Length: 293
Image 1: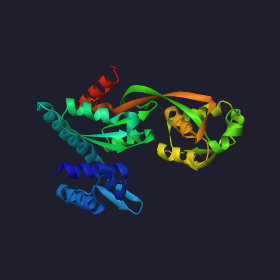
Image 2: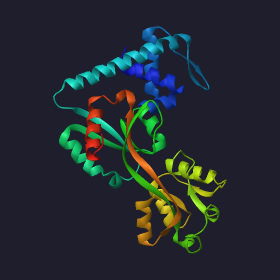
Image 3: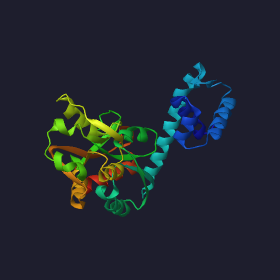
Image 4: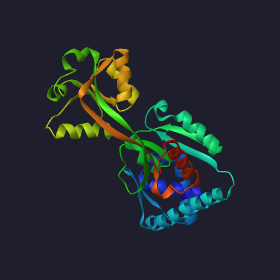
């Protein structure tokens, strides 16, 4: 049997669905199905019961899953040990970025990594804070920038700096609302999000404490989209203060003076992976850049 077959076995057991499992490990559904069938033939065991609602582990499959997981983890540990024996760290590091690259100073981070670990290939992937943990668990990213705190024992995180969140009002709505009460503010149309954005969660808690509910008219979580919707006059929104000040400078918005909130910016990896040579090297670089320990 092959390690990739065992990884496929684990992915299907976790998702219960061939389509989702294929997407998770980035192969075609037909290839995944063939791998599972080949593994079942080699083991002479039926691993899954195939139902219209998905794939369910058989009793035999459940017994073998734990061993498959141990084998895959052992293979990964061997790979990391081999990397540790190399004089020069080499490999690939996938980094989730949750906001614009200029704000995160990605160019400076890249220069620092190139200098200290020239054998590392960096890959930057768009992410959102609420996706960070799952993307790390699915190995879509190795490390990820995030806002707020990721309160999970499976996560290792370092706070790098802080950002300030404020409320922006489109210029078309500004004349009567720049100094409005919060009771009036929540009645305006809002660019909001249904996702677990720390900005919105914190402001929602602030409103809950006053028994207030705002008026969402548009759903958007990506910061560039929020900025464009505010510029177009669609509604009020939460925004990083540095971005809000730029909209004010351009004449597209005003900042409501009744609310500001500091939010930490952090970088995270899975706790079980923090000692891997590439990841620990990255953390050394990033903590040196921000002068933290």
